[in-house]
Image 1 (cartoon, rainbow, N blue to C red):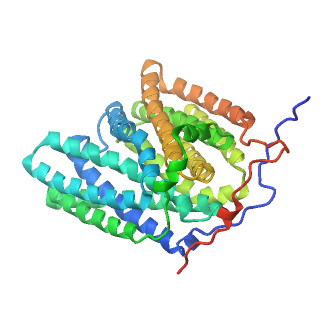
Image 2 (cartoon, rainbow, N blue to C red; image 1 turned 120 degrees about the vertical axis):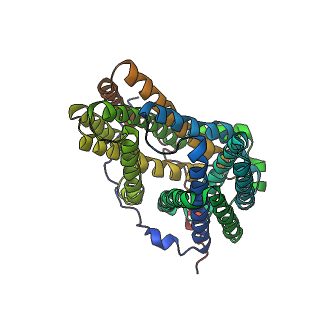
Length: 433
């Protein structure tokens, strides 16, 4: 029997219903969740910056290889230590209670940090910083797994876009506030973080929607949860997002070193590349919902790899500050579009009672891929040169376009239909004010 070739549509046959992001804020509980997230992440960024002043790095100046390694270590420790248990906790216990209790614990840790700072105990501050970052991973997983209980299924991409934009804005506000407060009041600025975590706990406690977890997980064993990772849509989302993230990490390291060695910019190549990446990620988050309306998920994936391949080649062909920055913006933009769509895919397709574990596995996969990519790009650029690394990366991005064009994304039933969508969940209204 001849298998017909896979047909790839550039645009959807029928555009999806447009969901204005501001309309989601009419949902009382979603609005509270966003406010709680912003408050929590401002406190996180503020506290993390103060910790980093002494324990990690005081600024984004210095040798790029050292800054890259510091970034990898700072991100890898909480991911490796807390990542495996974050999904279990998010499924085992009621998620609203996790968010409330977690904020309370973070407040106590920041309070202890004030004491540790005045005692000048670096060991204590290291321990508190590590615990703080680990709890942040658990809270992030619990929030991400809760989103599908706050909006309808067709609103997931828009909701994830709102929450990611809120996260970026909160991180910026927290970092700027932390730098300002630390300059004038020193470690006493930890008390601001204490207060904000208590406010976030109060806001999360005001959410009345069931956010999942607790009794839901009793019917989903670990073996059943892991079987879902082999489902076509879940496998496609995890594999494509992780592969792109790995190549993005390799490109990030190579371009940062390239800017250091070939372009006189008067600043660290790491800092410039990080800034360009942040711009691309923010724009990608803003446009993800519109792009998802017009294009199928597979097309979004293929274009993300194709555009990134062209961007990497451009950085090789024209080594200038502008072109390198534009290349990073394009790659970060492409990844962020892919990531927002993949987030929604994972949230929509996970069985009731297992979303925490499935999302945690997905989150660990693509974040560890990025960190491995950073180290690989740094090592490869040192052994050969950044131009060679970017050329290979561009070819690999192009190969990824072909691979994910062929990789199945749907599991057909005996009748040839794709898996059934939970229409009841998709149409369930949410509380409005």
